[in-house]
Amino acid sequence: MATAAALAATLTSCTGGSGSGGGATDTKGGDTAATTQSAEPGKYRTLPEPCGLPSRNTLRRLLPPGGEESPQDAEKVYAGTADITYDTDRRVGCRWKREAPDGTRHLSLDFERVVSYDPAVSDDDKAQNVYAKKELAAELPAGTGSAKPTPTPSAKDKGGDGKPGTDGDGQGTGKVTDGGKASPAPTGSPSGSPSTDPSASPGSPVAPRVLDGLADAAFLNDKLITADSGVHRDVSIVFRSSNVIVTITYDRWSADKAALPDSKDLQDKAQALAQELADRFND
Image (cartoon, rainbow, N blue to C red; front, top):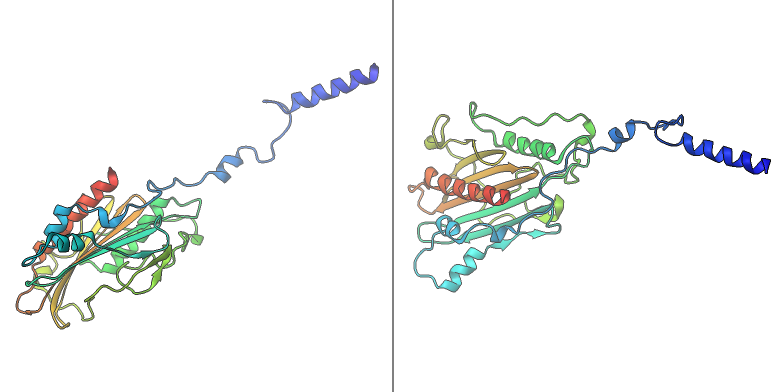
């Protein structure tokens, strides 16, 4: 009996020591939460299907029909062509082409979902760094405002989203980029250098610039190319919504080098599409 009583006392003592406020010490203590806590994940875990995202009315304004066209042919144009992709949760894209007497038009969308694998860096902060590098590469005129990369606490953040190539312009490289997208070069992609374009000079309302009021951050670029067989104007808009980077590329070609595609017309249409997409992401 004495032995049983001693054993019971020992078990009671052990149980009490492991309880709240007991004398037993947790070797990790309060550091456990600090060690395991990760930066906030991004808002988006998937990506929408890009070919079906713009409304038909928007596509008709961007890619107006030329001449006589059957409803079946029009639908084929507006349906778009999806980019080849191997991970639709990380990167998707779509392209459209409209041939018309006044010049061929191309439209492309690229959606990239950025993920940070550094627990100290949020998906949004990583996406802001990707966006800022794209804006820097665009070489916007001085005084248009600029985005600064979000400081990261660790140098190991480089390439942390597992997508080495995401800092590129996302347009027609013909390479397989991270996230599994094979990005074919678009038909008629510019091979010449931009010419001097008075309408896009610094201070002009249509000059390349940062766009206020569009998503979390956005910029517009505008280039007039005259060194190719035909003149064409290329307008691109890049914006960030949380941890997704959206790139819109819209161009118009003209066989007549005296008939320069109008900056304001193309920019207005591209910005309308950008705002529509930003609103859809926020739905």
